[in-house]
Image 1 (cartoon, rainbow, N blue to C red):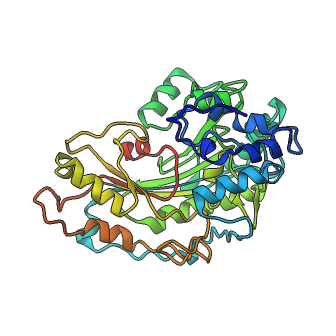
Image 2: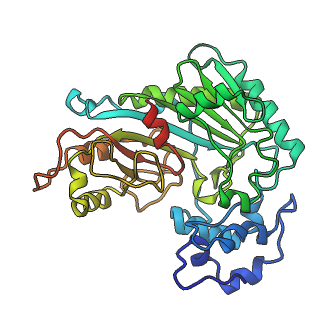
Image 3: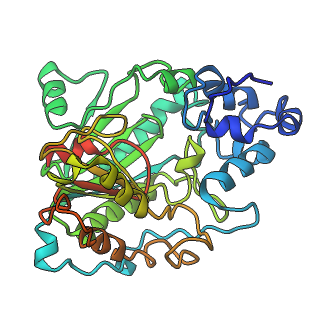
Length: 378
């Protein structure tokens, strides 16, 4: 059994008991991915927040004594619970913000993680299958028209000028992440990896990064309906060519178990030029609304007391239904989206002159992953 120093706080260290180790230590999923591979990253890097990666859809069941515990600890989703998935944007309930609140929001971004049902996940996929995933996805993307029409940029073959522009747009993902490397997610890098964006630069697809697909929609302003409609339309069209891994217990399957379920994060950026001067107050408000405070360049970056600082929210985790959440989550996630929490957060009355009324750079998020750089562009 792995050794974890006393200061270790990872989800792996909390959920891996001696009994679970004995039950799972010699197990493999149907693709040959072992339990030891599943926990290797978090065992090597004990500072990990999670430290667990699945090898396939089947990993969640082959290692169920452990994975069930991880999912329940993180999502509050029990082994007997069902997950209802819906990408029907016609069911989305998100009325427009009033003008005074709308002007506070700089940009809106929504993204989902998806993996193809016919293949193991990136931790276990073969070189040839990874190329086939890229071929299937780019074939679907090449048929996009209208608002979604754009170009695919292969990390292997892009020109220096294209790379420079993708970096300037904050679209480029890079290798060299030690956690992903230790999980086997960067094998044969950068082969069969790439980025697609539409002509308007409001829609992106990352191919074969941590998950086989990260589908992203974003634009200036607060129109969540438009952003989600674009995302859902694209995801549904891709799935016509390549079925996504999904079941009625886990929802959409992802490489990291914390990202499964809807696989979705919705975020908005708001500016907090005054509140950062009182970090204690700032944190107390963030805690009240289940917000994570982050810098404008995303997860693990510092905030500063200047107009470009930000507060980010890991809100109401709707990846899995749960009875102890504030929203009625035992229904499809789209139909249960209500953004009253955002209005409440924006208009919170705090007895302090440090609370600004011109909020416009906050990330209020449903999911996890990298998104602040994309907001920085728009």
